Length: 265
Length: 266
Image 1: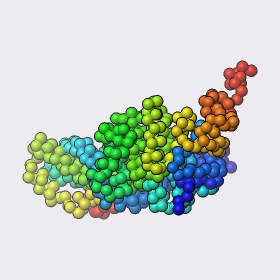
Image 2 (image 1 turned 90 degrees about the vertical axis):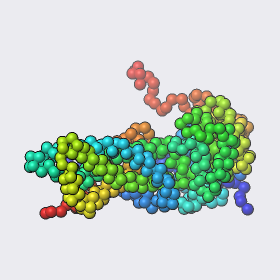
Image 3 (image 1 turned 90 degrees about the horizontal axis):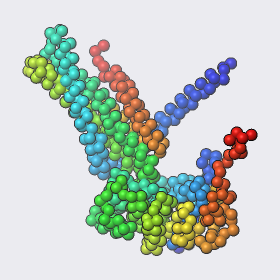
């Protein structure tokens, strides 16, 4: 009924589907083991703090600089659009809402995935390739509790803080362009922003988004590293997959979360 | 009363997928002895070490360590058993994000509640035993291959294990480092009252060091005995191995079609 080529194609689709489902199963089991093995992370919180330094603090430069530039671009673009309608004074609102609701969580998560996520994958992958994880296991220390869980929690804690700093820096960038450079009225810039940005609807929803992105990116990065074939090629492939998968998952989740948070129909 | 043998391997078989790696292995490692497991690459030596460490379970047969069957232990029991074991990995497997000191202190910090001052003294004693007390501040990347192996040895004996396993301890070492590791191996065994298993294919070094040898080929024990018995073994495989002949029962050529056919001479 089918040609030989078609059978091979169908079979390969079947294989890749089964593989994907299997991998998702492994990844879910890995996440469950990580959460269950988190006792050590909370009892010895300095393990998490050390990782927060590597994932969070060392990501600060890229987050702050990017935030500033994104804010400045928003200042230019926003002003250009708003002045057509004579509402330049709403520039502060536009900049703040774009950042807090959308750009802050999304762009900082994308940057976090490429800066900290890729580093996590490469580190865990190389630890596996050089038998450091096996050595730990042979020393009766569970690598999931000791190595994976502290990194997982550090990602979850760092991500919302980085997103908040990105947004704050962006607002400052918008202020520099809008108020200092172009000369929008400073009072209306800040007061309109203050009255239009709602804590629950805007700020809190942004924090929820960045929290979810933090879980997703850290989970993907750690799983890819832990699951990487223990070769140079395996680790480099896993690092690439972390960045690509994280970017797609962030954008997909952003759509879903925004749809849930959407009001006004 | 503890049995005379620390490790007993009875009728153990293991296969990766359907490829048999070990077939009906019987082996005993008496307490206090240094025993070598020899054989060419791919003969199943490392698999045997993993079975003893409980990292893998035998398909058939039983591995007993200190009287307990490893496959019957749950995770907690396995971890308890491993705390009494030290494994020196082939390339050290040092934690690259920690200093030499922290590497050696790792198990003490994870498994004991000792104060930091006591841990410091113990780490210094272990490092002194391998001659690297002065290197305690270095990172693993700053060490030579031989030094890294010695640090890994200090880490493996951190909690004074009763069983020390060495996976290819001599591979890739210069003659001086090789002599150092060999001497340490013997000295640690008597100083700690431990039992040692050495996986190796460095014949001459091993035969000078150990009390007993098992010779593995394709997952089967083909010869065993004291070093002198092994040297005198009539088994052609062992003779080829001991003398380092390039051709013999283990062929130089990977199985291939007739040479002339590949060169298209016919």
